[in-house]
Image (tube, rainbow, N blue to C red; front, side):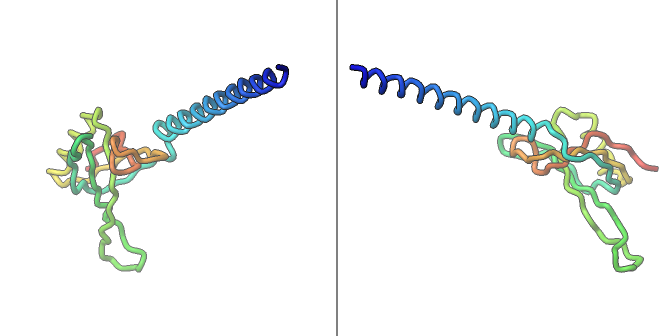
Length: 138
């Protein structure tokens, strides 16, 4: 009888530890997701001409853009090297989207302030770079 009680207590204690480990693992996964979703890896500014801004996606519509940086090449040539910067814009940033569309149509130079996220999620955008502000350059 005492042997059965010991085995039953072992089973109960094992289930308690399994539940604790599962809860700790779940909390770690949620914390990692929250950190990678809202965490900002870097912030910066890029300037150039907006080549395109488009709304794309089958189910999750995201705004994606491309900025032509027009930098001078490292080979000491006076020719402009066409280097592009791919970025995303959050769908709730209607003011930023409007300015980007206008700048794309007019061909004027802009300065983009962006945040680089830690991870890329398909429902959020195609890139890890999210534009937060746009400044038109004269």
